[in-house]
Image 1 (tube, rainbow, N blue to C red):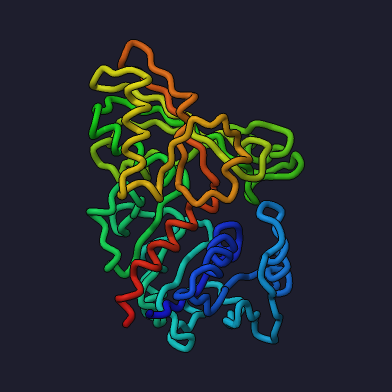
Image 2 (cartoon, helix red, strand yellow):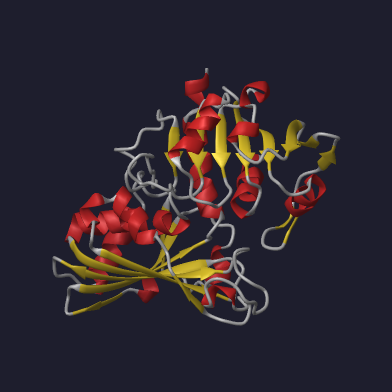
Length: 338
């Protein structure tokens, strides 16, 4: 079994989700964490999480970093690729989990500094020059042999595979997508002045409309839907557990029951069963917190009008499922480092 050495750049929501999940993976070793925040503060946030609870592993602090499950992780304050030295850490994969869009030059600089691969846990600045992988959607066209890969957005991962199978079975004329998203650290606790009036309102007290690039990400992964998707986002007063309200105009006539039967069956296939789920259970947002699937179709909420206008609701954990897809990609590359 080949051990894959991973370095995390950014230790926010997704970075800590990735770290927590790798603790259950014997063949993945987080050799370093780079973040501008204080090391002790980052370790505290890893141990005590308001969403997922106390870390169920002993964390031993050291001068350079921490030991968890006998594995050492070094903490540093490298701000960019120019300050890094991945060769000295024997890093196989750098995961950029800063939450910011990444450009090709910065990603390539990490390769020049000794990383064998760069996984981007966000969208690229330029969709034309960085391969973008949405698991269950475009796996056949994006190779994990690539040195640099973006994993798009959590919304695109939740809905992309579903749009792919619906397009294949029924054809799609238009898609209207609204993400109802839990708040994040980019939102405000209280009303403040700043650029962008709505985004600076108190996230715990409001439903806040915002823009999203989800349509662009999905079109990159599923070009057949280019210029057919309009997307929008609403931030709501929950810390985790999000949903997507999906409205489609289909090319082929169908019924609610037919669509549900098709989606329930196809999400059980090998290609999707660990990526997209289907349920008739009356779940709510908190029920998907900590779920490793990219998205879960809510069969109780499916609606169809005039046999060609379809409404779907998809639930997802806006950090955990996305991190799970990245971990799976890391595991799939282990033979490349033998």
